[in-house]
Image (cartoon, rainbow, N blue to C red; front, side, top):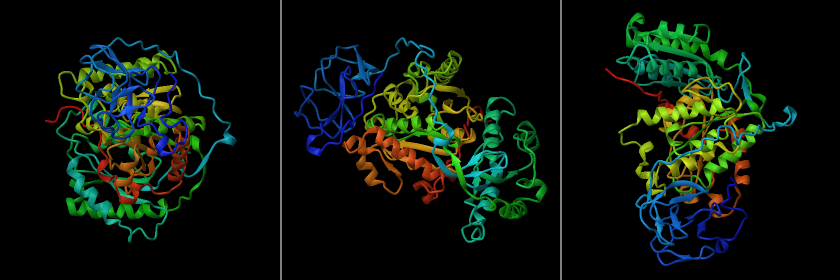
Length: 520
């Protein structure tokens, strides 16, 4: 499918249509601005029958009750009533229903033509002893169980800017605390997810060292955790057990001493030119609106296509928010087996959410709805565009190490902190996060780059937003131009430039391993 560019050419404000047509076959257009009842839409031959908020949809021809509503020439729902041209189209008259999908496994897959190594972009990265490349240089303080959360925070918070002044190459000491580790199943998927996530962070190339704090009697037993994940203590990986150390105060002092011993070694790093093939970016969207699928998401997709040509990796996730358009992704899978892995995860999510008031069953969040998204299928259609147009090379479970290059899928929930945590555990050393309503997300140890879908929100929240993709909606830039801008921003942030969320110190509390399973 050829995707229309909302800004095929730069035009003056007077020349810009108040609506955006995304595909010639669509029976709706999207309001570029707020449109009043009675306005004639030039080029579409309709007059609006209602006030239409920006980012919402307008019918451009009669749509019979039960007929498919098409956006990007893709079904986003079915008319709940007979709809006249010029009608406001939203969740009141665009109803979600199941329909037969042709998965067309691998039929649209095309291998990417990679640039020769000598032509690939570079960034200033941190090369670890095992050859992996980091974009940041932190020391992490981890917990096996929430009972040791205060100890970890006190240890990390002690190392403020003044105490780190003699170690300019260390980006900080960060606590990674969570609410799990006990009162849960001792074996099985919940414990596997927690341990896989913690291990992925401890081994992350953006960490120079780690201290792991435990209480001593928790179900996520420290010794078993290290044995299962093949972790071994050494100069840059230490442990503290509160019950053995002599309690809270003693454990805090012991942890401080262990971090002090790591600082000189952590400070020895130096950034050096590294190929963009070592960039591994997690793709996120949150606080989505009607422009997400028109500007920031497809622009990020263009940047992903560039990154993949340079040998890099992009991780598309939020499985529950890809439901409804999964057949468009399975057609791009490298092999039928890869496509079937994704369908299996979709089926798992449908069973997991059966009978529950969650968005996979049709209703998006109030913010998404107010921003112009009628249902999860329309949201998924826009969200999937973060993955660009390249083939899908593999499907991973939550927090599994991502070893394949190119575009891959990782199974995660749609909840942003949980999803990004899984991506970072899998090795993402950058996060690109699109938002229309204005998410203020950040992450450690992989920095988050935030992409605004529209100019009014960008201007209102410029302290949190890194890139204004609203220029596409405004007609000032094409998607290709915006994709180039995003790719350059990836290289700059990977080289050490602070993103807006980093400058604000946002990210410490956004470490959220997937809390799946029974709490007892």
